[in-house]
Image: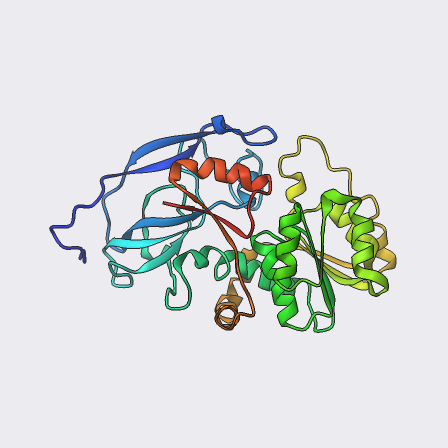
Length: 343
């Protein structure tokens, strides 16, 4: 039975962003289309959600290609998908009531009809709703699980994070500091981002545009080297980390944003043989394999946020119609912290 009153006027349609064509290289505005689509009738067990924020993320670039991957490609001419947080405005489920804040995967649209079981509560008593797409959501879990479960971080490790001013990277560095890293080094793409990393507690940070990454990383690490590399970038950064990692070092391979728009094969790393002599562990991971740690993560991270141990940045763009540009800007590094679109 619906919990909304008979006087509530519910939307019959939603604005959405569709993939109009598949990008070749860097996405362009013509690859996207704004459309209006009728909303289906609410069925038993379903909710109608008004989206408040949607997430644009680097992994979405891969889903725009028509290739077999860990996540199905976006279909053309229908709404794209992605993380969203919103308010339940109608419910036919005993598990969700009108007014609940929920996280779900039907982003890139104003309204979504979906099974209540496909939503999870956003604990707005702990943090603002938007945080559940970032520091307290999939982004935060990626940082937490990648550092602790994949790279097997231990107190005393020296850590290097690439793309460190982004949503995941900025949290990785702060988690490492909170858990006793001997040194945390970050790379970023502008002087402003480097300054922000130092404000967040990184011990050293450099602008990768200022010179060869290997030279800057070697200078920042010094004789102690690094024990853990959290890779968001790939390419030259991974090659540099392999050179500077200590024997027994570990690499958590989270992303390769340097290559997402590439139309030519990557040239680096050219020194992968170092992994043999140094007995390195390189492990790729997807956050979906670590959901079992979500409650542990939220409890820990919410405590860190509450006491100021961890800060998180958001770059917010207003208006669904601006979501494609926000996504393109994300791939160009225009964001500090989490890139969100506010509806």
